[in-house]
Image (cartoon, rainbow, N blue to C red; front, side, top):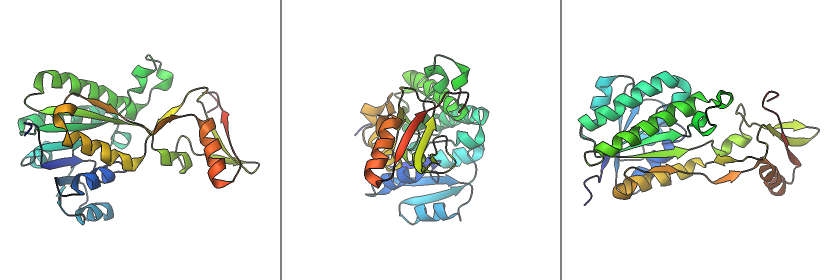
Length: 257
């Protein structure tokens, strides 16, 4: 058996959009148990996950060292997906440091960090494209993989890098929410000839489960996933074909957007 094999996984972010399918995938066949951190154990999402079986709940905040220690203690795996969109870069940065350090101290065998692309770095450090909740995660993912070079035998670690959820292209109040222009569903986003690496939420569970199922292969890995790199011209064409309603993509310059 792998020295990084796990059975009980401490999850931060389990009641979030990505966390729910991850928890479902981990406990689906009862191979793993999950200890779920949530601020409100009575919330509908927490109760829904508890009803799956093999799930226990720890009430508290990830921004509390005593809570983190209680969460990690008695577990041998961890999936950490801090909500940097709501907490901000500074909070994610500090608590990503501490969660990794405390996980090692408390004897976690395999640690998976929920990540997003380091947008500022991938734009060659052009601050027009700085995206706080992406960059906050991307910096910490690099740091975790760097630490893993020295610590990989004591605690294996992997990074799970996802992207914008595909459901966002038809959801309200997202950066790519379409409008209706003269009866035509219209996406106006500044993509030029580029594409977006969209992901499907349910797929996240499959990928994270794979990391825990194969810790020796996954140790040190940045698993970057997407449904496909999707142009919005293709998106509009697919929408029109499936729904029978006219749709279009109109490229928009960044300043206008």
